[in-house]
Length: 424
Image (cartoon, rainbow, N blue to C red; front, side, top):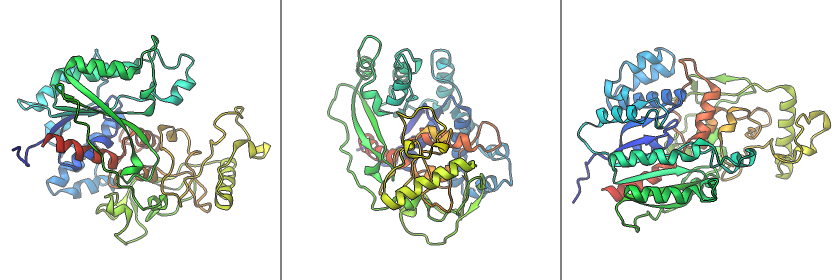
């Protein structure tokens, strides 16, 4: 019988801000390394590593001091042991860097084995929107072949299982020769020694207040094909309005990238049940982007139409003086309200970093798009999760991008629960 106390060690590839890792860490998995090419996301991973370490060593006051701008990020990281500092590897996965990445991971893991590899290569090349916008349908995009690089890590570390997450477009994306990349992936991983199965999971089935479907591939070393977990769904009874609870009301351009106190003291409800609010009396990144008067007028029209008729705004129905986009045939729903009275909202994507028109706050008095913290809550990130910029200066845009690209934490935790059953 396997020990209940066995450490399950994993590597997170294409780690992003760490939504997938966060779910696995909650279930007791131990990250050996996170590999991520984006500097801002790597900083986020290291800051979250500091959070977990300081929590474990009962020194969360140091992390709080950082969020309240009492110490610098460098001073925060100085509290970390060297191996944890080195566990976030800010390099692009690929032939030019793999040997260096392997060397760093080998040093971190020592003589112990790797039980699991998780991760999802950048999805733009597989996404339906990306292919529609590209004349060559993304067939020559190098990101199509990052699954091959993922396979090199399977070949090197031979974990018992792997988890590969990606967008729905993976199911249909084809190479120039007409073969699906998914079929190539499955065949390659079989050659390396793994059987691969997949299902489409809906984040809303696991407590996330968002319509977000993802392809979750799970691979097992060997030839067994009957291993994919039977995920038990448990939808939340909460409504989208929960993501706005306890946060100060803001107008466009208002808010704070650092500490923001809650406006309520009640410690019940969805946010506490799902560990989104989990102990601190403040949060961060509750800052609204500024909007010009034209955008704010359109926002009011969109909210009024939703409130009065429960209808989305059609761009072509706007007064001519408010129509500035030449494209009047596609993306006519480019202004959209995050309706608070629904059980789920539509998918949060990285485009939220460019503008907030698709994510209008439902309160017409606030008349703005949602903040990074509100977006993070839709992705089920805990309120003490801080998203970094490339430098020590906070960045709203960088936070939005990381949040939109992330795996919802609650979905990740459900995957971790089932993988733990397989490993223990």
